[in-house]
Every structure is written in structure tokens, then in C-alpha cells.
Length: 444
Image: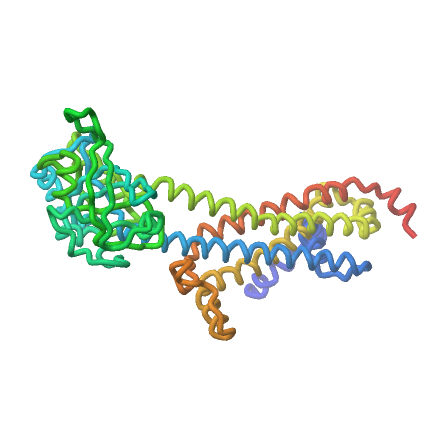
């Protein structure tokens, strides 16, 4: 008997009135969600409303998918550009704080201390300057890098980027030069040509003051498929020291890092033990214009493709406006039964937002799949059609690179959700202004 009482105790205490009251409060609290989702599934009396609703869903999915794919491809292309540039440009440079040259022995001593850090793989001395090259009636400004070929091979991969000539022919006293492919095209120079180099250094002679000039011989042409192909020239370290009057001094050390993409963080760590008379410049600071151009290009393309998402948001507005017009009687009945204006707003905001969310979810799923495999998809189409989409002579690549980043996906989806939510505000507010008496009076 005691056990029966324990089991039946909750039923004995059950109060139908309290239960119905709590259930009613729960239903009223979730009324916008229930009715909003039901409106999404319900059949439309006007076929055009269904068409606009489907178009909103499709446009949102297409916009999100296209934006994710394009951003992934741009990430891949930027990664390839950086990897090519970093084959020639040092990952980091150690220089004097005042920008002047320093004795080679002092620089090398500091370089040995940097090599004790696991993030630094190799260092090599260099001399840097600027010059104007002239061949016949053509000219080109370049940045001159004086390097030690034996040590440079541990810092950069310029020897693997040679288009013409041989990197090992860079010898002291010969004044041989290795130039970029674009510079060679601008000057019309080939291996073996002698080029007139004018330095921003004046020499005083009995005949007056003249800019210092020197004839150099092209012994090689390198090509990496980026901006460094134009405006960069390599000389032997000894020849550069003589031309720029450095004596036994050098301008700094070119450094190779284990993780070049983390150069900013590595530089911050190395600066803690670096003497005040030296400073570190990472490759992102050296190539600030290139990094800024790539970021700006990504932002501009993203904004242009975001117009597709904005169009989908405008379609959500149109769909909800027509939906409000179609459901005026339903709104009037709900209002007459005690539904508040805020709940009516919630109903149509739920409907519009969920339409956008479904499109965003589909677009993000397909976009992530294609964004991660777009290179293979394009290669398959090339094989199927027997055509080449990316000419390596133009794009320096035979495949379409892509890198899918989670922050890009989150930014695209977050922006699309915000647009979808904002698109529902005006139609939902209009729905809350429907007067029950007028709507039921003129409804037939």
C-alpha cells in the first residue's frame, strides 16, 4: 500500500488548471517560432510568392557558395605568390638600427647568436643599393643585392629559379649580374649582354662631378612569377662592396626561418635579446605593398560577390511583404485572440530568417566542399573537355590552387545571417501594424 501511494502521489497532486495554464504560457512564448516555421512549409495561394521564396533560398545559397569558393581560390593564389617570392626574398633581415653598414665580423657574430634559436635556419651577409640599368635606348631601375653565392644557397632558392644561365657563375671581380625575367624583357637583355649601370653615387674628377657608372655582364635570368621579377638584380658580395664603397662592411644579414608565415611572431621573440644597435625587418614589412594589394583585392572581390547575397536579402524582403499581404486575415485573427504586436513581428522574422538560414547552410556546405577540391574539379573538367584553363605561361601554374580558411567561412556566413535578419525587420514591422477590425472587415 505504501508503494502504491508513492507511485500515485504525482497523479494525486496533478492540477489540470495549472497544467493548462503552464502549457498555454509555453505555447504563447514559442508562438512566433511555431507559426513562422509553419508558414515556411505551408502552400501559398499565390504561386508567385512561392517562386520568390524559392528564389530567395537559391540566391542566398548561390551567393554564399560563390563567395566561399572565390575567397578560397584567392587564398591559394596568394599562398603561391608568397611562396614564390620567399624563394628569392629573405624571410627576415638583420640590419643596423641607423641603417648604416657594419663590419662583417660584428654582423656574423650577431648572426651566430641568432642561429642558436631553432626558428632561424640560416643567415648570409648582403650589401644593398639602387641603380639604373641602360641597354641601348631602354632603361630600368633596380634594387641591387650583393650576395655570397656559397652562403646564399642556404637562405634562398634563387639557384632553383634560374630561367637562363647558371647561378654558380656569380664570381668575385667579374661584375656578373643575375636579373629578373621582367627586367630582362624590359631591357631586351639576354645572357652575355653588357649593361651600363648608373649608381646614385657621385665621383669627383678633374672634369667635374659625375654619377658613378659601371659596365656589368648578364650571366643569368631568374623567374619566380611575381613582382620581384622586375626591379631586382644580384651581384657578388665583393663586387657590390666595391661599387657602393662599403669596404669590408656589409648592410646586414639575410635570414631563413623555419616558419616564414610566422615571421612577425618570430621577430618579436628575437627582438627581446637583440642589442639596441640592430633591428629586424620581416618579409611582410619588406613587401608591405604586395601584402596590402593582396588584402585589398580580396576585400574588393568579397564586396562585389556579397552583392549576390544582398540580392537574396532583397528577395526575402519582397517575399515577406507579399506574405504579409496574403496572411492579413490570419494576422487579424491572431491579434484578436490576444497575440501581441511583438509576437507578430517575431513570426515573420522567424519565417524570413529561417529561409535565409536554410540557403546559407546549403551554400556553406557546397562552398566548403568545392572550395577544398576546386583544383581537382577544374582538372577533371580540363581532362574531360581537352582544354587548358590555366596557361602556365600566363598564370605560372597549371592547377587552380585553393586554401579554405575557417575564418572566411565564418565571416561569409555571419554576414549572410546578418543580412537575412535585417531583411525581415521592415516586413515584420508592417505586419504588426495590421488592424484586426479593418483586415476582417474588408476580407472576402
